[in-house]
Structure formats: C-alpha cells, structure tokens
Amino acid sequence: MFKYLLPLGLFFTLGGFLYMGLSLNPRDIGSTRIDKPAPPFTLPELNDPSKTLSHQDFIGKVTLFNVWASWCRTCRHEHPLLMQLAKQGYIIYGLNYKDSLENARQVLARTGNPYVANAFDEKGRIGIDWGVTGTPETFIIDKQGVVRYKQVGPMTVELWQQKMLPLIQKLENS
Image 1 (cartoon, rainbow, N blue to C red):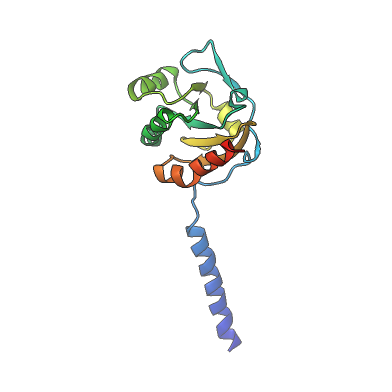
Image 2: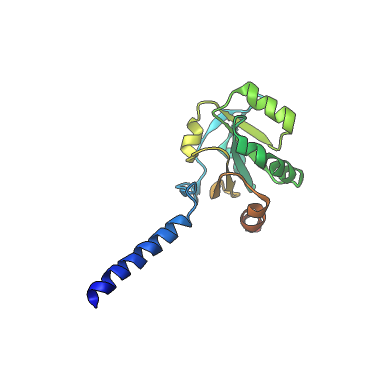
C-alpha cells in the first residue's frame, strides 16, 4: 500500500508547487529598494538641461517616480492615467530612461507632460541604481525620501485604486 501512496503524494506535492509557480507574476521580481532611502542621483532635467533633478527633490512630500521612455509602447498606455493623476494634484517626477532627448521631448509635446520635472538618464546608469528592469516602472516615495512601493509594468486604474492610492493616503497622513 505504501508503494502506491508515495508516488501519489509526490504527484500532489509537485502539482501544488506547479500551481503556486504558475500563479506568480514573472515580471515581479521584487525590489531591494523597498523601505530604503531613494538612491542618490543628480541628473539634468529633460526640458531644461541647465536645471537638475535629484533624490533631494522627493523630500517633504509623497511622490510618484515614473520610469518611462519614448520607445516604450506600454508607457503610452499608462500615460493617460498619469495625465489624469497630475490634473488631480498628485506629484509625479519622471525618469526618462535610455532615450534620446529629441524623441522624449517630442512625445511629451504631443501627448502632454504629467511630470513636475523629468530627469534624463540617457545611459541608464541611474535606472540601474534604482533596480529598474524595464519600462514603465513607478515608485512611491514617502516624505522622508524612502521608497515604499515599486510597480513593475504599467499602472492601471484598478491597481491605482486598490494598491497605490491607499498607500499614498496612508503616507500623506503619517
């Protein structure tokens, strides 16, 4: 009897692991930045390279830090939501990632600019420090400049309402 139960038990155990593995998001590899200070950086602003954007700009307010590129199709799908959030008064900074200045400026001129300021990371070095694996990615940063959330992939209305907005409200009230 035992010789029949052992293979059956192994089958169900392996089936359980397979089921759990298939329910995971393969793009969600977590972040080593959660609950740590935002990585230091200073980069020229996209629209005015004589000005800079740095991690110090996040201090004192809850902010979204959105990593995007003109060549990113998924970024285009999330852009209307970013525009809507900016109109509602949410503070959004951008990190233009591995892009050309001209292309990035053209996209914002054509589709609108939801960003308070946009850092230009042509080589992607700052993105590496932040643990960026692709675009789009969005970080929520608290008033002390600590990263509290990372969204890999596009923001959606559902994700905004269920995860991001409640966290932002909590951080604003603390």
